[in-house]
Length: 300
Ligand SMILES: NC(=O)c1ccc[n+]([C@@H]2O[C@H](COP(=O)([O-])OP(=O)(O)OC[C@H]3O[C@@H](n4cnc5c(N)ncnc54)[C@H](OP(=O)(O)O)[C@@H]3O)[C@@H](O)[C@H]2O)c1
Image (tube, rainbow, N blue to C red):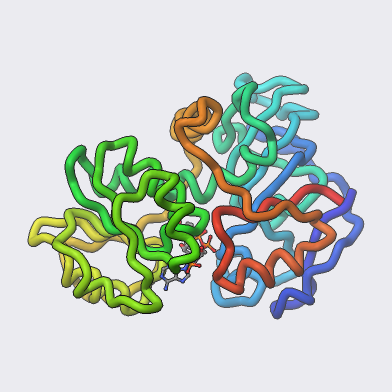
């Protein structure tokens, strides 16, 4: 089968399509014929060696997947061959691949009315957004500031926050304001022209998808008992209001999110669909920092 692999750490050009054996199925896993995967910024950081939790190359990138179960491992009762599933895996054999092995407890059934490309756009971004708002215990009537509101995580967080009854303020370039208003954002700040710390009243929750000095700056607009949740390293020191979110696999959360997407209560914006043959181009686009919503990749 085909997979995207890399022999060395480096720029997008290190990504290459190679022929590899079908992965071996272990107990508790299923084998999936990939329908689609999606790009997350962490893929680019792993490719370049900015984060190293996959170890040394060669490895295959990719966390998100949707597809059809073709084989079921020992001890798996949740799925059968032919089931359409979506989910999130963290392995060195990745999801930029024609076939993927995944633990059954990292997957959910794909709702019948949700197309597989949209399903593949969801797992990492949606689980991170969902679990961040859970961690923040965001309540109806509260004000939340979401940084990088137009990105993969951000545009879903805007909608999840509205479903919780919050007032949503987002940072994004003006070019993304209409897009975000359509998704329910109440106030928008163009961070390229306006300093958010002087432009808004205090907020109850910040979801920071930028990091760095956005940490200390965000704390300046947070209520004394507010909650600051970041998906990125940031300079909040030991402020007790700050917490780091790591999106984790959860079939229950994925099922809930899948139903919201299927019913149209949550809209998943796909900026572009590319072939896995163009994985390097997809990484260049992701690294431009200008992708609106998600980039989806389909097999060769
Ligand atoms: N900890 C975790 O488990 C976890 C999970 C997922 C993601 N993350 C991290 O969270 C971050 C966001 O992920 P993502 O998938 O949403 O990224 P993404 O889709 O690549 O984000 C792209 C968006 O970022 C916006 N942006 C860039 N710089 C900005 C700034 N200074 N202020 C406001 N908006 C800005 C851009 O909008 P404009 O064009 O409007 O600027 C663009 O739409 C990444 O660093 C990622 O690694 C962490």
